[in-house]
Length: 69
Image (cartoon, rainbow, N blue to C red):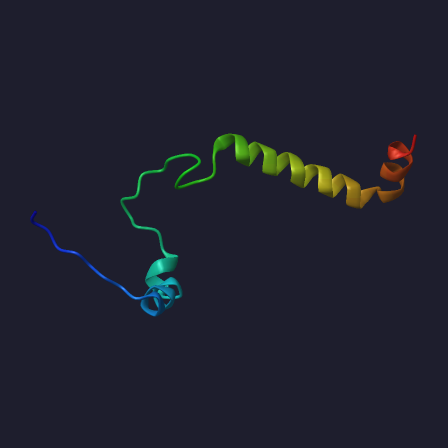
């Protein structure tokens, strides 16, 4: 079998995690929802949760009364 095997130790890999190059995505990486970017449904859910949290912060007393039986 032809090929090169690259062996890295744990310390080196942990150091690479904090390097500036690791914080920037590759320029030619395809946008795949749910893999390389958030899924569209996830974005919609995040927006709904954000709106819900904002409304709860605006009227905390109203939410408590509505939740009580």
